[in-house]
Length: 394
Image 1 (cartoon, rainbow, N blue to C red):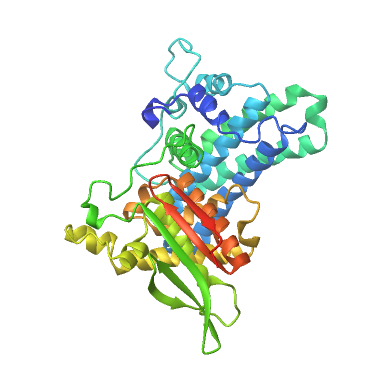
Image 2: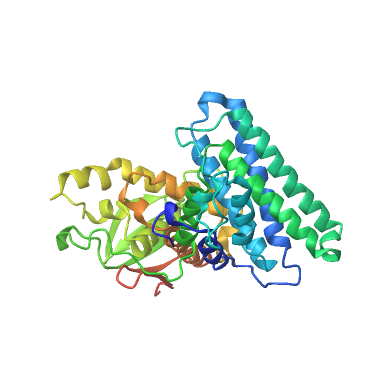
């Protein structure tokens, strides 16, 4: 990635974004995915504008959402250009030439910075809603026309038509960014940061949060826990046992309709193993960081515990509709983003999205085994960043 949004060029962005196109080259209809994505994200931009119009001052996330959605539109547009063998720099040069009123000679380089496309950008605040609405509607119209011509087969019969559409969409995208008073460079930079947070070129586990703490206040580096069912007075409970000692409270589903949520401590074990973070496990093993009072109160206290429990319950409700994530190799970005927002302000926000995805998916792999065998031994290895299931010895 470029060091900053101010340094980002259109060529750099196209090269980096194309490297994150996970569906490139899959199937003969190579334009389908980016076309649908471009049209869909343009619709998401319109949706943000609609919410702003409907909710006015109560919609506080408007500006951040516009920046994110513009970045997503740009990603699909860039990858559509790449699949079509086009370069953003050529289109950008035409836009720059048209907007340059200085009377100076034509461009000296074929790789422009995004900032050169918005020389008169006002950065004092959000754009006037009416101006943004007009430019956004033009952007949506250009994207819609491209999709219509593609579905009618016109693009395949006339490749030059695609070039014309792409140039018009790029110009409309720049104008929409100007209308929203949004730096397209910043939108592009944030988009890359988001994508590489989810799909990095190399996955490197960050250090454990308590790596430098007193060993007596660290999460155990290897946790071997038995999770099993037992009936007590005709009621079925789940118990936790570690080193031959029952720990924590016995659990039920706490719901009229049984769903096996009583096995959910496996998710906290997965958080500990993969993320190196679990206020719940810290409390359970009595390894809260008491020698650092502020950290103990903020990161290991009741509110952090409630947040982790809330994430567990919220993701579980989502997973229930998707067969407990069975056969899934990736998770919806919206789910991961919601989890990230829940831990905002806590140390766990430093965990990249790919790491959250891994923790959730690995936790559900073990959960499905627990459901199948009605218990088992879970080994959470924080050093190896793994969590595994073993059948309990009878």
